[in-house]
Length: 365
Ligand SMILES: *Cc1c(COP(=O)(O)O)cnc(C)c1O
Image (tube, rainbow, N blue to C red):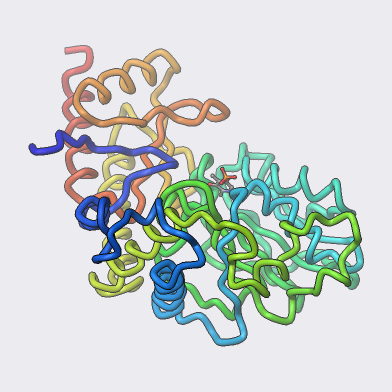
């Protein structure tokens, strides 16, 4: 193998499609005849303007984003968005959150700094191993929005059916499922996510926001930082200040790659196939068990455990030695976790299942 690459099951930053890495490599020193690397370019240059415009257009094509939604590239990660969202969307100062795991909990804690947060449903009672029924939530009339984390990266749950928001705006953190399947954008007021899980290099979110929800800075409390006002980014084409040029460029290459393989329908088909291989294995194994209720299992993040923390650690060490990396579960959950994002080939999942099958067969022999 030329580059000696391994199967990387990291939850984020994570695996990228090899054709994208190769294209980035080929253009590294001289991007398409510009004579420089994208990292060396002015964000105000014509070349870069074309990069960002194409990235936006390709994303719009992939997700069928309606014209009345803006696409924003913003730094600070999903963590800054946890604060920016209430700053921008709380008009009445009240928001409803669904608590499904580590990332929605963090969003809740942050939103509480800016207004009243009503946790309208939670799966805490069973250690966040399912998505609560959200067909009839108690949503106050003055709620500004309903917030969900659509794929809990650490707990491995995903929403099959969006909540009934009773007419309120739906806000969704799609960080770890962005572009993993088709998405009906008009079901949401705001979709956002850090790109380092399923799209590109760390350091940026993509926010897809309905235009009428972008309030001018003059309508926001005066203490809201300029950078946190969504209007700042919307009014300046995501270039109010120096954007994360490199991430925008590589994400754009990933969008082109996704289009080339047939778009999000084709991607979803591959993702279902990959996840099925892993879940079929877990369902028949006597040593390994998935931790999530079947109907809420994620296509992207698959946590599983053995009977003990010692054996978990032993398996993690053995996988690492065999060329599979980053299978250790998040410290808050323990066990193991296989993140099988868009770029993970089916081969990688099959190889892992083969390894775990043999590990189980040889154990105690
Ligand atoms: C990783 C992750 C975050 C945090 O992202 P940062 O970009 O590191 O701030 C938030 N939400 C979800 C679902 C995540 O997976």
